[in-house]
Image 1: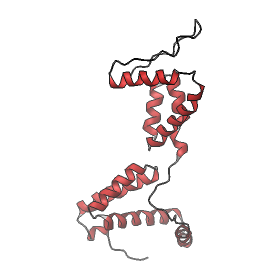
Image 2: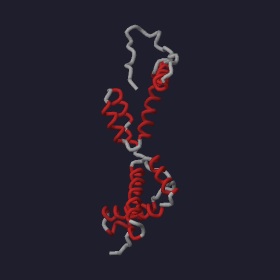
Image 3: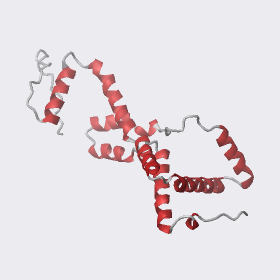
Image 4: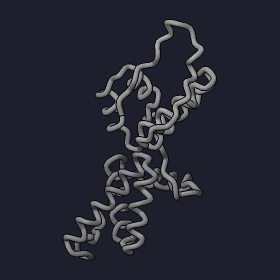
Length: 187
């Protein structure tokens, strides 16, 4: 068994704990595909020149994970295979788009399930993909709206979010009697 020098010998204990927290933040952002959080933490580390400490901890975490997951005779083979498959572009993180659940968000909003929406948003590590999926769903629905309806919705949103009294075009003036107006949603 090889004897390794503890990181605590290189840094004061407080600095070790801080570096561990930074390494964990970086790993969590990478694991959950949160590019914004990953870039923000990486920029902070680079600006404070903490690359060596955090890299040491990340390598230590990876070595521990490999040690616990693989038998000693398989560990080096796994690491060599990982090294061969390393991506050429390493600035981005892998995003699990399936976790975003834009369809579930749309269904929860349609059903008026406030708790469902909150839980889905809270459980989504990177809401960028969740909102992107919702935007895609809205874009897919736009061609199905009658002429002028999208403009009316946009004008209503501007009124609600900007508090200005603006002329809201009434696209539905010529519609049949009995056609109900969509429910109003509070902001």
